Image (cartoon, rainbow, N blue to C red):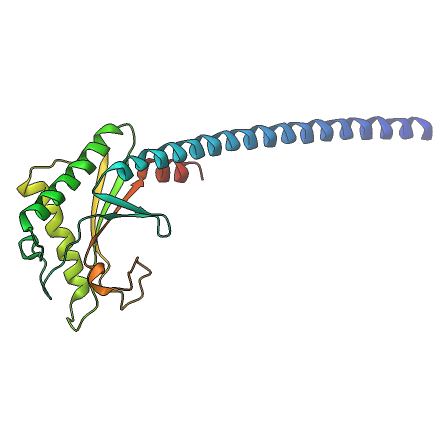
Length: 211
């Protein structure tokens, strides 16, 4: 009788271990499959990021933009010097104001062309105004007003229509007094300028969806 009980125990024990083995095997395979899919998604995102990063290099071929790799930003290569407290483009100080405004118009057309050439991607376009540091108290508001004036110049005055694959944000980073870590130059008058950010929106969205 005792021998039969012992034989039953070992048979049950063997069945239990076999079942646990298959459970662990299934879990192991499931983990491998999920990791593989995760790696495929990550590789696809990385490839898409590389493609979009390469596409933005098109702007460096233009005469109107300079890419600053130290800050990873595009600087509009049209110096916009203003009298203190002014934001209207007509107040820009330049030897040839009409040529300056023409260059700003052409810069907007270059962005329009870029977005049209890469309509398969979604972007966030940030137009950032900056101001030089001086006794004027409202340089942060002023830098935003300058960026807004540039966007209105492009859209309302020159009829530049940006593509539907672009979300536009207008911002001002002021004169650096609040230490916002924005790009600054040692010569203050050179900080009266516009920075252009073109960010791949669809990469952000796909990354969030895969979390």
